[in-house]
Image (cartoon, rainbow, N blue to C red; front, side):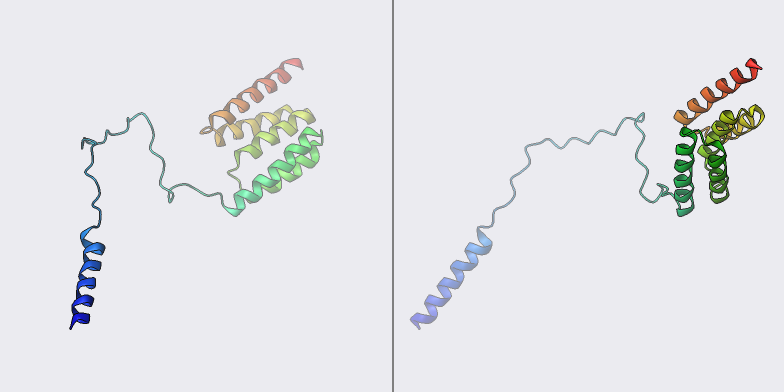
Length: 149
């Protein structure tokens, strides 16, 4: 019977140690004030499901646009125009293509084509302030070309 009492005693001690002495979290010393709302001037980030991932077509178009940009920098406007036309067939909404087409036509000296593609670039890039500035500067350069004739 002593063995039974000892086992019972040890079991009780273990239960007390395991459950009775569990530390409770301390009470918060921080006053429970409501969290301030963020200012309305800071835009809240868009939920992940609303952020648009580029489509494979858009990515392919952008790769071609980058190739054409290199060709324009290398003063190869005819090759750049061919690549930009392919890029537009893949993604007609890529406004950068129109900008670079205008650049290629500026190099070729065709003001009429440059004006038209600059106008299209302005239309497609009107929501992108940094690109719109580039388009405006390009338009000014085209105007200078028109005045030198």
